[in-house]
Image (cartoon, rainbow, N blue to C red; front, top):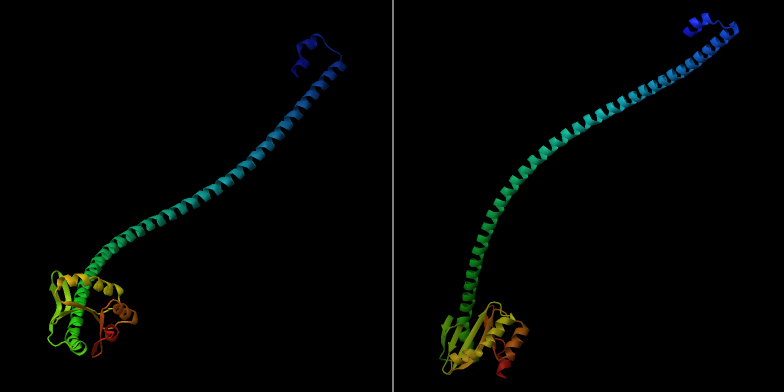
Length: 254
């Protein structure tokens, strides 16, 4: 407002009304500027309040984030502990599995050894059983020859006679005939019967000067086995209880 009272005013004084108008204009401008300033201050205050609220919200969110991070760190720590325990358990499991494999390997070796021993024992038992069965038939068969075929001068050979590369369970030699006896503890197996029949031509070559009579002996023979033997001209010798006899004698005789 210095220009109101400037030297020019004194040098060129204006009328009072003009000066009042100028002052009023100046005052009006000042009021307008004050209103603008007030609005700016109000807006600044509003912005400041919003900023404060946003900062409060931000601080709240940051606190929640810190709490979540703290909880996450705690969970990660628990997870690390669990993983460490899991690794220890896995290490113990591997050690146990290694020990188990060693035990299984030792057990397998023992089982293989026992199986090998059992096979040897079964083989020996089968051999002995075969010999026992052959011994069982040897003497009674001589009686059968005397009873059924009226043979008198009989030379008995058994058991397991070897002749020209072949092994015979029982051989009974008479003047012009030779009885070749094949003994099986389980004679109902068709392959045993078939194999014995297939050897007939070979037997004829070995005993060229004798009539070959084939006898297939077993502790029991079913009807199918007896029928097959009869069809192929082989006597079926069965030892049942204390009785040893040729069960298809009448069929072959006729």
